Length: 284
Length: 284
Image 1 (tube, rainbow over the protein chains, first blue to last red):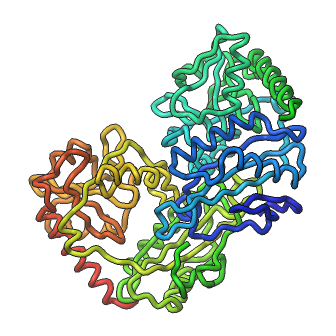
Image 2 (cartoon, helix red, strand yellow):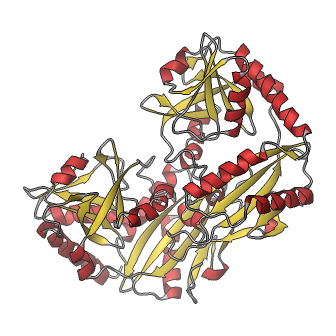
Image 3 (cartoon, each protein chain N blue to C red):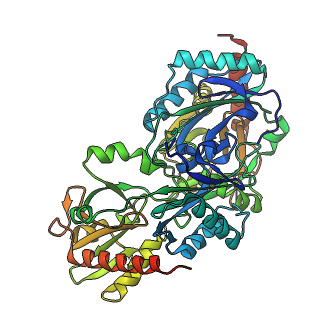
C-alpha cells in the first residue's frame, strides 16, 4: 500500500483519505481483472490535454460496456475538487472504473469509480540522452483501443526483461509491431520519415501530440511497422504520458542506428516539451 | 456484492464474514488486473480432485511469479477449516491470489490470498440434453496454462454472445481452436475419436478426467483441432468443473452433427458423473 500520508482519493462518490479506500472482494477487478482506466499528468497545477484523456476514458468504458455514472462535466468537477484538496503541482491522476460488485463473479454490476493522485517525477535530460534497451515479445492485446486494466503480460515479463538488461518490452505479432505495455513506439527512417504503428495499439495522447509536432517538420506515417523496419531504422523511441519521449537504442541484440538517441528523436523531444509547457501555462 | 448472509471467507490470513472482506485499492488486481485463481467443487461435503486443483493453483502462481505464502498442507488446513465453518455440502471454493498492495501500482508486492465458498447448482439432465450454441472469436490467451484472473475478452463479449442466442464463446487463432473462456472443447469424429486441443489451453481438471474416462472406450487425441474439424465433427462438447460435460450443438451458423447431443458425448457424460460420484464417496 502506498505509504503516502495526506493523499485524498475519490472513491465511489466520496473524497476520502487514500489509506481508507477499499473495495469489496466481489468487485470484478478482483475476481476477473475487469476494468478500464486512464491517466493524465498535471504540471504547474494544470492538467495537460485533459479533454483528450477524458474522451479516451469514456471511449474505453463504452467499448467494455461499463457505464461511467458521471457526465464529463461532473467528472471534471470531481477532478478539480480532488486536485484542490491534494495540491500536488506536479502529479498524475489515475481514474479506474471497475466491473463493480458482482453477484455471480462474472456479470458486471454498477461500476466503481476510483480516482487517485500521486506526485510524479519526469525524466531528466541525462536519462533521455541515455536511451533504453527493449526486448520483443509475441503478444497482441485484444481490443487494444480500450485502456483496460489488464497488464498480466507486461507485469509477468518484468523479471525476464530486467534479466536481459532491458527497460521495456515491445509487443509484436508475426513480426508486425504494435506497442509497448505502457507506451507507443515510433521509428525514424534514414530519409527522416516518422512512422508509428496504426493498428492494434492504444491511441496514446502523447503519441498524438508527437505526430502533431513531427508533422510540422517531417513526413509522418501511421502504418505498418515490422521488426525488420525497426532493425533498419535510423532511430526509434517510445512515447507515454509520464516518460514523454524515450529513445530506444537497442532491440533485443540489435543496436538501432549508432546506438545513441537520434537527432530527429531529440528534436521531437524538445518540440514535445515546448507543446506541453505551452499547455501548462494556459489555465482553463 | 453477493447478498449471502452467514458466508465466511479466508481473507489475508483470517476467516471473516464475506461482507467484511475488502482489499485496498492499491492491490494489483484492482490497478492492473494482476492475479491468479483456481476453483474446485465440493459434493456431499467432499472436495473433488483437490490435489489436482491445488497443483494447478501453485503452478499458476509460479508462472506469474506470485508466491503462495502457505504450503499446500497449510492451505489444505485452511480450506477444511473454511468448509467446516460454512457447511455447504454442494459448493464451489475459489482461491484468488492477487498481486498485492503495490507501492507504484505496477510492481507485485506480497500477494493477497482470498478464499470464498458459494453454493453451486449442477446442470440438470434436461439442460445437458438440450446442448448449447457457441460463437467463435479470434483471440488467444497469453500463457494459457496459467489460470489468471484476466477475463476481459470473455466478459466483454457476453452481450454480443447473448445477442447471437449463444451460451458460450470459442476462441481460435487463424482457425486453430484453443478453448472457451471458462471451459475446454472436445470434438468426436465420425470414427469416434475423441479429440481436444493440446496447445495454448488451460489444462482443465475436468478435461483431464474426461480424457481418462474416454480412454477406456475410445481413441483419444490431444492435438490440433481446427474450425473445419469442428464443423465436420459428429459431436462436440465443452468441459468444466461446474458444467461437467455440456454438448455443443451449433457453432456460429453451423449445426454440429444432427444438432442434438451425440451418443459418445452422453456416454462420456455418464462416465464422468460416475467418476465424480466415486470421488465424492471417498473421504480423505
